[in-house]
Image (cartoon, rainbow, N blue to C red; front, side):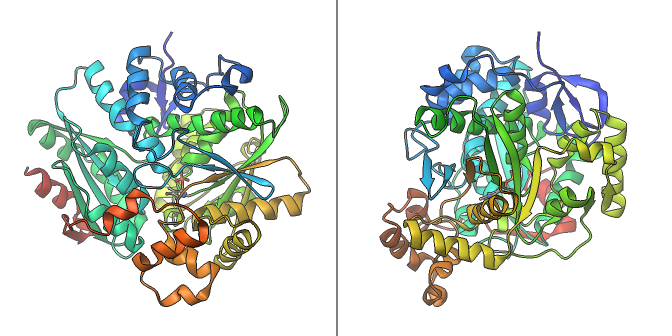
Length: 495
Ligand SMILES: *Cc1c(COP(=O)(O)O)cnc(C)c1O
């Protein structure tokens, strides 16, 4: 029996996993969700000795049931290979009294590589399975990391094209360079005059545009999404938490059955939702601690039950978390609404029309697994500096938001369960903020000039991703207003 998926806004439309991967977003604007969260069918004892790839298979086969064993293993082995600079793919590092799961050892040195290196294979396999002959066009809005990771994942993958939109001035210099130097005949990069939410809303509108869809079909194209709303992005992330827990057990840091807390630096709510799914699959996770930066919409939501995006958009040193509409939260809302698509659709309509909605007290009760926290820019700097001084470990700004929130939660709650922090980016990627947090004297230095210094003080090798952009040519020059994204897409595709 296949596990089927339906839209969070309409339970009637049911599709297989491969169809959900292909479509990205449901026809009604909702997100695909599995009918239920499957349980793991292997024991923690069995998982203990497994490689990342084998763990990925054990987890993903439970969700993507219409992929054959051969297909899924092909996807996993094509994704998690030498593109990663360590055989273990996601090293678990003890830093002080917390455990950092380093998810930044892929091609673009941020955690989105973890899911985006497998999505192109899940997608092209899904296309074959469903007899799709059209060329797949990936449209993606990015606050910095997704874009490059998606470009790297899809570059020169036959049968695909990819167009990435990013907010001009809203990403770091290194992130921008990484994107505009991207190779691949099928890649395009566009700078938007606006913020990430404008770019994301623009992409959503293009997906919902029926006329455009027909026009493109005639020209032999079909849209899909690489954003974290695609279940092909979400499911591979569940693996992190199963793998990390098994490694903690293997290293005898915890005893069988011992609950751990998990802190996730959150933006679009994809990664932490995956942790929630891992818990439901049977991983002994206590609290899911949702860490926000100063754009603390989610903290306020967990505090009050009111989601209110009507507020100032703050540019922080953790730009990949500068988000006011956390798209994946819709899947959680649907779940706590008792999988009721009408209730969810009503709330999402309120979010669209007025920018705010409130959930009921009954729904709030079902959020008890979650704790919200946030870190200010100063908290973040202090966490980076103090951790470096005490342990020699240098973490990036996003991870620092989580580490700060994790420590704060421990102190405030007295909850002394061990804590796993999802470490989402290499410090090399946000080097200016990281180095000035450690010492203000680096403030005036050029980002690229700091690379050798970071390597020296952290005693880590300079990642290939950084070495490359020092010399690569700029290949992408597109720029447009947020209102003109659709025209830009047509121009690029020549329709
Ligand atoms: C995208 C991103 C996040 C936020 O992850 P979500 O799944 O969107 O919540 C955190 N840190 C980094 C470095 C990212 O790139």
